[in-house]
Image (cartoon, rainbow, N blue to C red; front, side):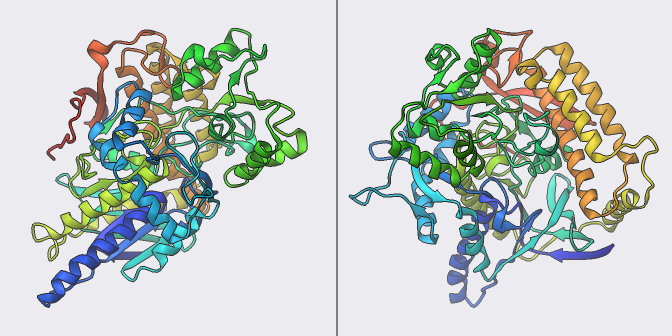
Length: 579
């Protein structure tokens, strides 16, 4: 195993939507700063490093494309309208200050994307084609390559592809770098940085998925997003928020393709096997749409569908093209098995995910996107408090985090000082990696894949997965925790034949850490506020008096401790914290 030490000014972990835009923004902010400094003959370019587990050209949630920007302030609407929509959908458990700060930037970042080359559909008057009150249509199959190309053109930005970051370097609650390994070049990296932006996305693969075996990665969220950013923060004592607000997507059965394009694009209603429209019976929030589908099936009125029979030829063609931009398997299925105008589309809920872009799960941050670890900023799905951020919200948070990080680096003499990562930490991490590579493995046949399947089965059965219709009890959660800790204890016996398998071991470790946080949060909220997202059988009713609050957590002496924080006041635009 080769070893390499890198020194940079700003380290961005994760080259997805938020990470790429953070780099673009940081380079621009630094250039503006240098223009001022040049006058004083004191110019110094900021070194920016993106480290990506895959390749930034096709990584993250936009890897396969997207056919709409779902967070946009359309004509006649305001940022306040968007905040109210997100707040209502989450039943009030949001950070209004964070939502305001991104919604004010939605249109600005959209315009920038168009300048970079994104095709946004326009009508005969040259206006963006809308889809509902908050969305605009795009040809977005190549949206990620567009962002990657923009990063590639930046002189002061370096990209390390195929490098898996697995731990931070934190001392006295201040981050000074991170550790990782190259999956293709067998290299251990110790990276020193003055500030770090974490943009690794949310967590998939915690629960047993809809589709088993070789199709298990046909899921709503990227299977490569393992909750690495969450796990690293949890282990180093960062404050986290709202992990109990899991996200369960309502999707086309088997293909797990999006349903929003059907519901908003052609007005398809949710109907049961009797042809009855049931969506208004349960409510129209994201979680209620899932809950209604689950309940109709439990009560014998399933299967459930989105009613597309009888749509026009023009609408059908629009759907076939739209799904080629984001879920081509659905278009292929229609062509093979009957087009949407001739048969309704069966729907189902996915397994639960932890994702701060659709719900409020993630790091507890202030309006600058600073976490409770000094020098560490969070953006995109890994940042908590601001649900329904989607693509443009991730871009906006990347921009905010980048500007804050550049400001932080320039403050308090950080431009000249840097804390070195202790050599003992480097050696400890290298020793752990060598142990996995050199060991013979467990005689019982444990592998990372087998333990991952055990983890998913335990979460599915005891922590509110598909098997229990997303329902759980305190007793079940206790069993889930016991099983997760048992699996965690077996990790040290695993063997990796190469660095790809080594990555699987570390991804398993990350998922198990996030599982424990999810279980702790689910147990802490003694109510059912979001049906299906958190269906607590011991507390089936909503309790505004005690739980119209944020449920937050920290790791203390090896255990996740939960506590509540008061909601931001109506109209309040800041909720800053002290490190």
